[in-house]
Image 1 (tube, helix red, strand yellow):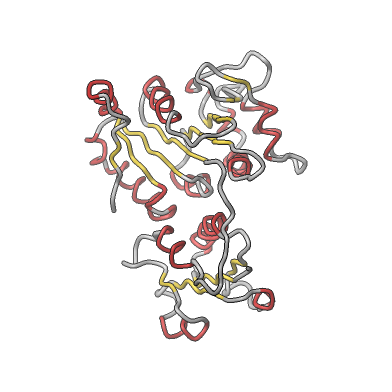
Image 2 (cartoon, rainbow, N blue to C red; image 1 turned 180 degrees about the vertical axis):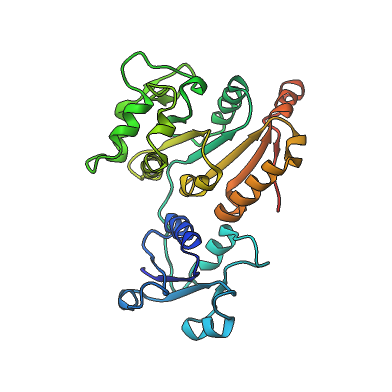
Amino acid sequence: MAFTIKIYEKNEYIYSLLKKRLSCFYPDAYIVDPYFDEQDYEDRFSDFTRVIYDPKDINEDEASAIASSPIKLTEDGGIIDCARLISMLRPTDDAPLIAKPLTGTLTAVIPFVYSDVRDNFIRDLSSGFPDSDMNIRLDFTSKLRSSWHSRSGCNMTSLLEACRSKKFVPEDILKYCNMNDSGFLTPGSTANYDDVNDLGINRSITLMHHAASLAHSDLRSINVLSVIEGFRTKDLPELLAECDKAIILLPARSAIEDLGSKDLISMLTKTLGRERIEVYYAEELSLRDKNGNNLIQRRFAV
């Protein structure tokens, strides 16, 4: 059953991130920006309309006049909690809607640790992935920081160059991958040391979009893990927009007091939603071996 979601948010950047996130859970919904699209053509094909509004732009009475039970964008005027929005958008029993199943996951790891510590963490993390047909690893890193160098001629540079073609489809990612010694299918490192940066942020965003489509396809079950390093902070929200989970790996708990770490976590939490952000500390991974526990997680709460 089709329905319309109208998002009254004048900040185009916030609106675009919301649209990407909500469309993953409601792929059949018409998600529109009323400030840009003044037509009401989508209403003719919808069974009902839900409204999300920013109190800075319109008040509750104005939003209620457009649709019943409007949803305030934030509870406290600061953080946008996408999990809350998704739960409140769920239609009532008399207007059922079945969300598209996610058969795989797209996970991003943003590490601030040595590469061996990072790879040990990823090895343990992958053991907890949902059962799938295969696990894919994409290293958006410099060649020096990549964990595996393919000898077959396939590499991350070739994949980044290929994905710009209009003929490229998400399944084509598999053509550039080989199995590494950790059980991941991966293209490995770039051909040159700085190709990820030299090819530009838009190329990485395009490949992440294809990776999300591959992971969320119902044709087969595939988990994709992306290692994200060296990007500008302002580019991360768009790069991570379609991830199911973004993990920040810090060296120690004391790093959480660093102003840069605080700002990064706060920014990603605000733009992606707290339900998708997790923070781990490398210093505590050793406790797993001593105590026989799984990875010790510290979730950052804001």
